[in-house]
Image 1 (cartoon, protein in one colour):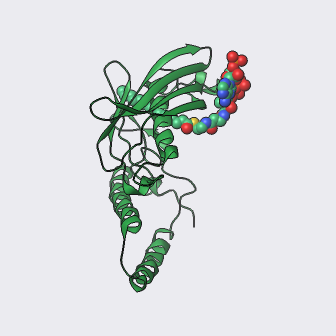
Image 2 (cartoon, rainbow, N blue to C red; image 1 turned 60 degrees about the horizontal axis):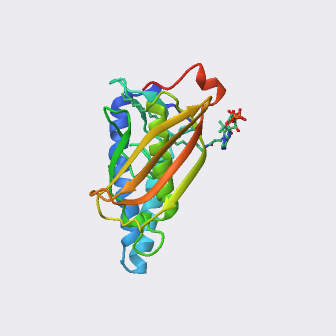
Length: 211
Ligand SMILES: CCCCCCCC/C=C\CCCCCCCC(=O)SCCNC(=O)CCNC(=O)[C@H](O)C(C)(C)COP(=O)(O)OP(=O)(O)OC[C@H]1O[C@@H](n2cnc3c(N)ncnc32)[C@H](O)[C@@H]1OP(=O)(O)O
């Protein structure tokens, strides 16, 4: 059955409960990646998880929680793959808009993000930078879809250590806007740098994102 739960239950209470479930699901993913229990225990846990998965499937949405303007006036997207409080796949990345209207996020990758041994997968770093660069153009008032993302990997990205991601809008030409950003150590040493070109779809020009 497909049901829009938000229309039948208090939306904020539902989102809060989903956020708790999502954090637990991330714990589960981390536990799966690092578990060293014997095969029989793996099989037993798998069976229990199958039952729990079916309980969640009892009522299904047609798509993840939507992009919307929250009660505090700040845009939120609980279903987003990078920032979503209701998406276990999300880090989640918590992006701040600085007074200078740049994007800043403190983040710590986990073992589940491993690519090369003991390092974060390059695609994961690119995903985080895509979002940071997109946030930077959005808060500059020229939100767009990623057209081109150029990533330069300077140093291995560790997991389990606090890092800082920043991005800023640089310029626009018509519906094309550019931003640049980086993931760095807390002392500012850059690990990965990126430049992005974002294209504002024609229909968004009339109806831009708030910011
Ligand atoms: C107080 C606090 C406030 C807080 C506010 C917070 C707000 C923050 C909110 C939210 C942040 C969200 C951050 C999200 C970040 C993640 C974004 C993604 O991952 S997006 C998914 C991946 N990208 C796609 O799926 C695109 C798929 N492609 C398309 O949809 C189209 O191709 C699109 C829109 C990119 C272009 O389509 P057309 O029809 O508009 O393009 P045409 O009219 O042909 O071109 C316009 C110009 O752009 C160039 N162009 C088009 N596509 C290009 C491309 N791929 N690369 C380079 N140039 C391109 C063209 O050459 C043309 O340039 P010429 O005007 O001639 O100079």
